[in-house]
Image (cartoon, rainbow, N blue to C red; front, top):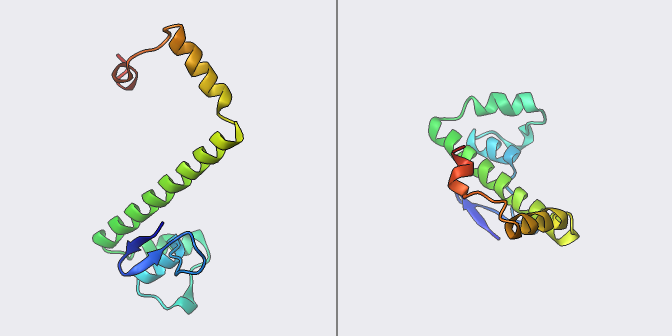
Length: 109
């Protein structure tokens, strides 16, 4: 699955140009690749140099990255059977009418 980010492609394939959070920060701050950041403090310092627009783009990219990682983990857990006990419990609770409307749960009513 390819995503486009300011003319750079991020994909799951190693054959394409991979944009990681680290290289994204380097690109956004117009740093040379030979000066790659290697520590969290270097990344944080670079992020503070971003404009608000660039920081928002980084935030959006990072949220998308985390969302995709979560989806892959849930898919892996479902395929491995790790979620089977939770699913069975939910099905039993539904059958026994031990459920609440989602709005009630979300709003603590």
